[in-house]
Image (cartoon, helix red, strand yellow):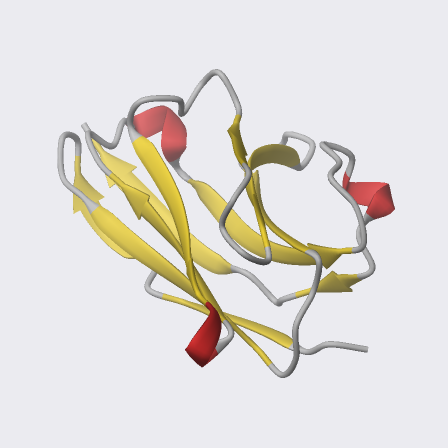
Length: 119
């Protein structure tokens, strides 16, 4: 099973940017970002195919977040711009064998990285 490690979280002000990284011990067909805010269920944020050819975003982040990949480094990035307080959450990287918005269909998970956005 592929091991995933997230990094890049932190505390920022509204309107700031952050870039999250997800390093993997191997390749997965699809890599996704999910997030979980306090008291809420984990929700889908974005996914990218292993070759970068296909991406998809949740409506709440479309136009502000960009997912990208560096195959040589087995690393996926989530560039987050124009951050809002409602983006505050633990962000998780997940790896899977097919495109899905459902967390239950992913087989590899990282431990998460905290993102806090202050007003």
